Length: 103
Image 1: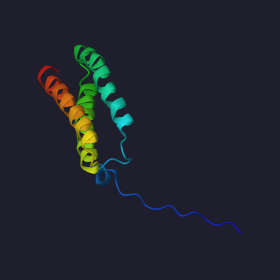
Image 2 (image 1 turned 135 degrees about the vertical axis):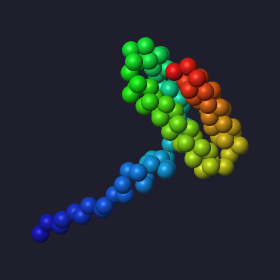
Image 3 (image 1 turned 30 degrees about the vertical axis):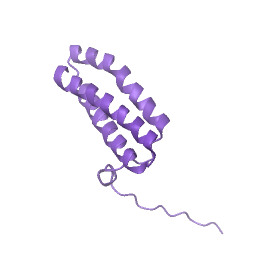
């Protein structure tokens, strides 16, 4: 006799967007941070070509990164970890200010 697997109903994506789906690691945040700065060159090109969709998505990615860093900062207790997260946050806030003013 085979047992059927039941599927649990998932909450809607809008309800789960408040917190990260997975716990972000420092390595993951560093990779995301590097991606944001590397992507800036492509976004400058997208602006020149008039591609507003990519620009909006990039700005959303920056906002989401800052939300995740804030959440992870609240989860950690160690001073060194919190300091590293603050450094990441401050650098990306500078990037965000630049993008909002010039792109």
